[in-house]
Image (cartoon, rainbow, N blue to C red):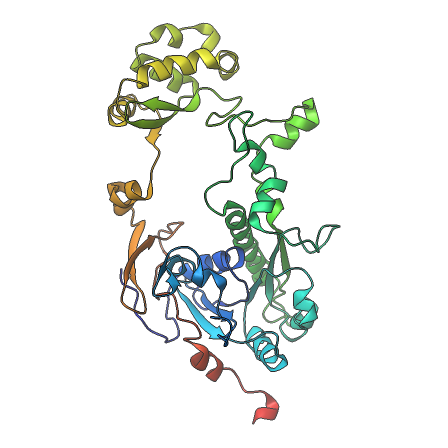
Length: 408
């Protein structure tokens, strides 16, 4: 769909329509959380620093990676469905304007270093005194408390501290990063979950004393969001003293699950279910392994994973990825190719699921962007606005602010 180049207030009908969100974050973690809310109808007002003689202004992500006419095409994903207002938070009058915006808001999202909001007079206690129903999402490297809270923290450092980076390597080789900012995104999604739970609590706490219900602070640490997804890492160490080590493309303790070389690339095969394993062995002509009682359960397969991997690899090596997938799909064995951006753009399933959509930038460039996740049956999300140019909505948003008593 082509999102209209409009600066008018949103008239979205998604499940979050009517929810007003102020976004003070930059780059990835906070803005991704706000983008997710905006996709489902929330009116997100993004506060950005204005341009100056020495700075282009705006969220730095506007200038990250590949640019078109000076603006990142990534920006068209991260800031779709948002409105942009320019205010210099170093200025007292601008901070007062932000405070007035927050007074009318349901949700505030920030991802500054702990203490910055308090230094600006925008700490939660101060804001909640005027807006008791305010929900404030705070994303930081190490959280708002604890001995590391004042350290600068980026997602990549959180991935290391959370335990992920140690595992993303071939044995004996340097750990590598996941190719995207996964630590930031995991924190964002945890933040969105927190906002939705806090909204439920706010609805349930409506009373005569709290007509909008009670808001609260959501404290998300980047490293904790990563750590929360580390599965058995800590329990295995706690119970057995086992330190999980990197295993390349394999999934240690679960077999077979690995990447196997084909004649023209690589294929991922997950044959680790008991019945799936038998079907896999039949498909590759190794019924002897499929019928081996020692391999009937995962524990036995893990003990002989090298033999199993060798058998699968021997079968895939002379075949193309397409040939392998044709056989394994017919046998109902989970398998897939390793997709590039080109593969994604050309894949009919992505198109059928509306996961590739088109937006038109302010200067007329048509750009394909990821569609909406998750898919709600009754109240789906939608891309209704292109990403804003810097300060595009300042006049409209600030002009609609309720006047203060001394303004009358």
